[in-house]
Structures are given as C-alpha cells and as structure tokens.
Length: 381
Ligand SMILES: Cc1ncc(COP(=O)(O)O)c(C=O)c1O
Image (cartoon, rainbow, N blue to C red; front, side):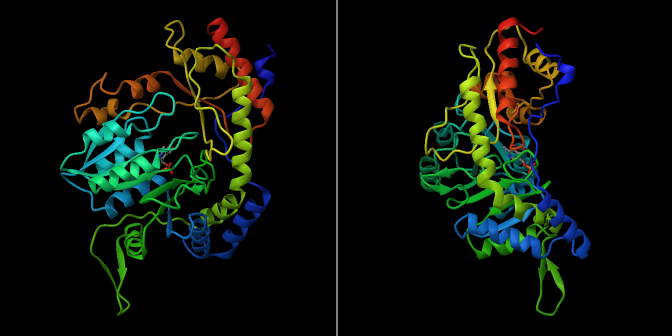
C-alpha cells in the first residue's frame, strides 16, 4: 500500500464552484443589494423553467421548505403525517415542529424507497400527508404514490433534496405531482451554500408561501403590513441565489460526471465482497446520483466504525446516510422500538456513504474501491 500520509484526503462530498460564479458573487457583494432581490427572482424563474413552468419559491434550506410545505397544508396538532424512517432528520423534525405525529414506515433494503404498501396500511382518519424521500438511483414509484394519495385524498410533500435532475417517465422531478422540496446544501447536486426550494401548485399557494417564508407579512393597500399567521424568516439572500443560478446551468454537466463515477464504482467495487450496492444504473433510467451508499455485510468481525476508520486512515472520508429516525430519542417518544422497521434498522447499522461528488475523478473511485477491497479482505488493518 502507498504511504497514506502522501495521499490527499478525499472528501465524501464537496461542491464544485467555478471562477465565473465567484466573480458573480463579488459583483453582488459590490452592488449593495445582497439580501433577497433580483437574483432570487432570476433563480426562481430558472427553477420554474426547470420544473416545466410550475411556480417555485426559494428559501434558506430544504428543511425550511418542508416546514413551509406542511404549514401550507394546514398540518398541525392532532394530524398524522406518514414518512419513511430511513431519511434525514428534517422529515421527523418538521412534522413534530408542526405539532403533528410522525408515522414511520419501512423501506426497501436495496432501493431504500419508502414501502408504499406499508403507507397504505397506516393511513387512518387523522392522516393528512405523506412525506416520501427520493433516493439517488431509485425514485419513489410516482404512479403508485399519487394513485394512493388521490384514493385517500391526502397531500404529498416530496422530499427531493437528493435528486435534483432525476426524471420519471422523461419528466424532471418537480415538474409534476403535489408539493416538492429541493436542497442546495453543498453536498447536494447543485448548491447555493445553504438553500432550498419549494415547488407549488398555483399562485394562491405561492402567495401563502411568500408570507410564510417572511414573517407571515402581508402588504396592505394603504402601504402598511399585517400578519394573520406566524411566518418564519427563511428568505434566501441574493448572494446565494447568484451561486444557485450558475450552478443550475451546470446541473447536466455535474450529473453526467457523477453518473460516470457511479458506473466506475460498479466496475471496480470488489466482487463477492458481501456488500449490498445500490441498484445498477440502466441506460435511460433518468436517475441522478447524489450519493453512493453501500451496505456492509452483517459479519460481526468488523464493525462499521472499524471499516470507516480504516478508510479514514487511508485518506478517504465517509458518511452515514442515514440513522433510523424512529429510533432517535425524539422518534422513540412516539412509541417506536428496535425491531419495528427491520430494513431501516439494518441500513442504519451497516450503511456507509462513499465519496461521490463533481470535483472527483475516476482514479479517486479506483482508490476508494482498492481500499475497500483491501479492508474487506483483510479485516481492519
Ligand atoms: C434526504 C434529505 N432531506 C432533506 C434534507 C435537508 O436539506 P437542507 O440541509 O437543505 O435543509 C437533507 C439534508 O441533507 C436530506 O439529506
């Protein structure tokens, strides 16, 4: 093995921001108009075009967008919202912050997609919405999801934080469906440093969203302002929107590069390692790849921590996507226990997110795969 101290640290996620974007940000900073202004309007208009004309409003994060979406659906005390326990803390937190009860269901072990048959089984008189998370490489079955939502007359808030640029039957996620949220955190397919977006259905929703993201303020004809419901302070500054506009234009390039890295992972990842890999990309499948998550074999000889530490020793950073939401201290307060959602729990215990980002090269993937082969074959040395 080459001397690890000679190898640069490979991050598991990293943004790629070009010089034109940096110069653009400097222009915004010099302009004096640095909080929400013309660049927010441009970013929203570009996002709306991306979503085939549906109205889109940007915010400071996808987390804010999920909270606003749930508020827009009038979800509150006494309501239930069904979500998948194999997702990020955002979905649990925002449901609880609305005063509603999170109802967790399991996911598929390979695709990690929400199990829609379990959703159907958990729908009751208090169910108001479903918040499914789309996984890189495997979108939720949208035909089945929306058939179910229509049948039971419940709202859908798609958590599309990880899949900007994925298409379903040839149409981008966000271009159809109910409410859809995107994230522009630096680990995502495009970034605005922090940032997120909410795709709405019509202008009435847009008006409410604009109030909800900015103190609940409504402007009256006499030039004064009123507040009828409590809004937040989630407006995105122009500095961030300027980055977002440039990044969105580069999305196809970023996605093509990410996909080529994923194909290399499938080519080079050690065979017969016992690891479960994500679904193999197929030509024309429309999937985007924000993360490459493997599932370690259940062998008790090597803990996940040992595996990750061994990669870290070789200069390779990894992540965990995700912990089981129903077994978090907050999730357990709703009565969940270990054993309730076996696939989610197995993923939470054995998943490792390997490096994947637009600033990586194919030989970085080769380096990760060689390190995984070595560690998996020989224990944790
Ligand atoms: C699946 C998922 N949903 C939502 C979010 C929240 O995104 P943000 O950081 O923009 O609030 C994340 C963040 O990592 C995520 O992974």
